[in-house]
Length: 400
Image 1 (cartoon, rainbow, N blue to C red):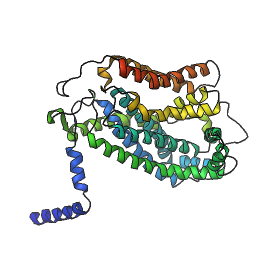
Image 2: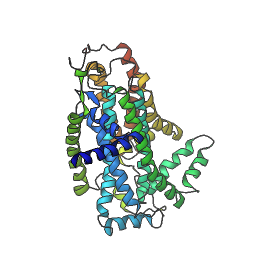
Image 3: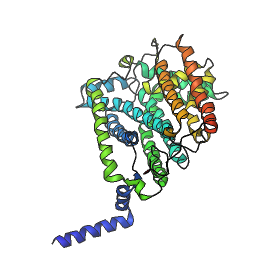
Image 4: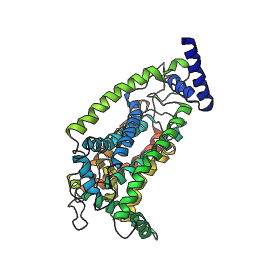
C-alpha cells in the first residue's frame, strides 16, 4: 500500500515537474552554493523581501476597508482604526512596515557600497536593486497621501508641484498628475490605484534581481570570487538558519514599534484631516525621504533642486564606472573605507537636516552636505580608483 502511495506521489510530482519545473527550482534553491564567509550584513536582502511581503498582505486587507474619496478617506482610515476587527493592527503593521522596509533597503544598499557589490560582474544585480529602490520610493509617497491628513495633502502638493520646474511642459505634467487644477479627488484616486499596483511591479523587479544574482552568485566580504568548492557552502541549511535568526531580531524590533511606538515614526499633523485652507507650519515628509528632501531644499533654484534630488538617486547607476578599482571590498582599501564611512555619516546628517525648518544655519549645512554627497561620488571615488594603494588580496576565500 505504501509503495502504491509513493508511486502515485512520484507520478503527480513528475507530471507537475514536466509542465512546471517548480520542484527542480526548490532543489536548486536548497543546493545553491554561496560564499562561506558571508556576515550578517547579507541578511538584509531577505529581510527586505519579508517586509515587502507583509506590506502587500496588510495593504490588501486595508484596501478592502479604505475609501479613496477626499470626503471619506480620512474617516475610512479612522473607521479601520476604531471599528474594524484588528484594523488598528493591520494599519500599524502597514505603516511601521514601510519604515522597516526602507531601513532594510538602506542598510542593504550601504552594504553594497561598502563591499563593492556594484562592480563587475554584478552590475545588473545593482541596477535592478536601484530600480527597486526608486519604485519603492514612488509607492511609499503615494501611500503617504492616502490617509488624507494635513501632511498627506500638503506633501502631495509640494512633491507634485516640483514637476512644474520642467521647462515648457512642467505645468502640463502637474495638471496631468493632479487630474485637474489642484490636488483633489482625481489625484487621490490615481494615487490609490498606483499604490496598489506598484508593489506587484516591485515583486517582478525583485524576481529579476534574484535571477541576476544567481548568475554569478553573491559577493562576499573579501570581494574575491569563488575559486573552488571549498570556498562555498550550500545556502540551506547554513544560511537559512542565519536568515531565520535575523528574522527573529527583525520582528522583535518591528513589533516593538507596532505595539509600543506605532506613531513615533510618523507626523502628528497627519492625524488632522486635510484642509486646503490651512498650511502646516512645517511641511516634512517621512523619515526615509529626508536626505533627498534636504538636497532638494539646499538648492535655491527650483529646477536645480529637482535635478539635484533626482540626480542623487540616478547617479547610483553610474557607480560601476565611477569606481573603476578592481578591488571590491573596503576591507582591502584603507582610504576608500574611511571615505565610505564619511559618506554614510554625511547621508545621516542630510536626513537630520531634511527634518529641520528651512532656515539658517540648516540651509547652509544642507548645501555643504549636498556638495559632499556629489563630490564623494563624482570626484573622490574616481581619484581613489586611480591613486589609492590597496592591500594585497588573499588568493581565495578559504585563505582569507
